[in-house]
Image (cartoon, rainbow, N blue to C red; front, side, top):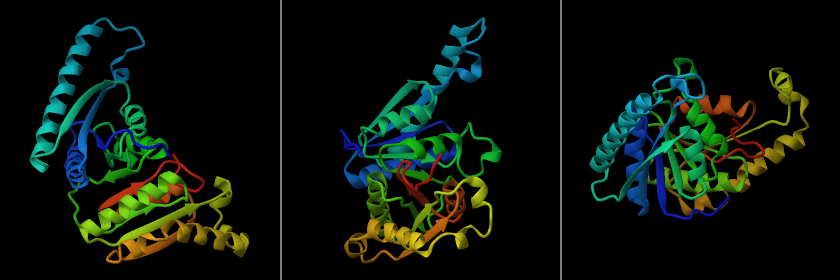
Length: 269
């Protein structure tokens, strides 16, 4: 994992209620870490016909840009209300929000995103396309925030043994201690193909030693943190399954999900 260049928390804003909840959380997180906050809104012109025949490209650009600046202004008000003394910057970017957030992840301490946003279809369930893409490729810990103002339930952290995953674990323990919440450490792994995973006998077909190794990966990843945060109650979960499916399942009951980027057994995109 690359070392952050700045003590900054970055959050994506798209005007949705879920994104506003993410901005509130990001502002509070930045304030508690002595960091500044950077709010990003990306102008993605693909849905408006750019790249193909379009007769009024300039007019569309001005209209979309005006809307983007309004979204940033509203997000800035939300952040200032959540953390009045916080240093906050806004940025209007061109391109996909997931691309910008992934690029920023090499330079900032944390990324915060809503579980789904204005562009997510209802069939996307709990994670929109941006959340899936960012959690898959980010180079820093990512916090995925639900939009229902949930202040109960566990903190869930994805564990795969990678360096980025370890940073997410550290952040998750700190958040669980701060929120007085239990922590669920989830290690989902499989070196099996999708067809094999669907077979209910898959777990029985694997040598016991492999299962023990995966439990060891989780134990080693958590080593030291429970001593550092004795107030945090930790529950360990190891699954042979599709990682994204388990993340979606746990996010239904979690108040917050913390993940690192894709690793050996992490939450793959």
